[in-house]
Length: 155
Image (cartoon, rainbow, N blue to C red; front, side, top):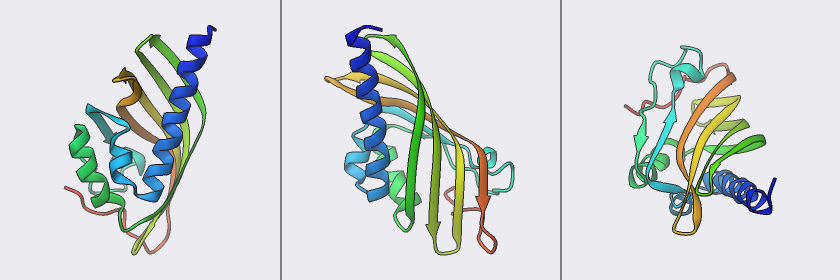
């Protein structure tokens, strides 16, 4: 592995750390700045909850749309996002992809889940910064606590 490749890997790790930090602190402008202008955010709740969620979340396309969507989803929630064990593949000097093991807790009135799974992401180097071009969250395990709903209706 070259020094350039090591630098790319560290930049992507930093990008993902900032993703977790800004989402949990609800710093939506900083969170949105981590994405490309045409980024895709895809969190399929019907897959995430193995069919128990009646309201799959829409695929969100574009930085501005992601910026508008995330406060609707998580502003009233207390959240903790943690990622680890990245499998990073550098596909060119200006593009990469990764799979991250993840854990999260999302609590809001009437809704509390704890989940595990994987982020599947692609990245591009744009304007001198690495940004998320696509993000797909798949869950391998999720616990919806008793007495809570499957999730907010975002249709």
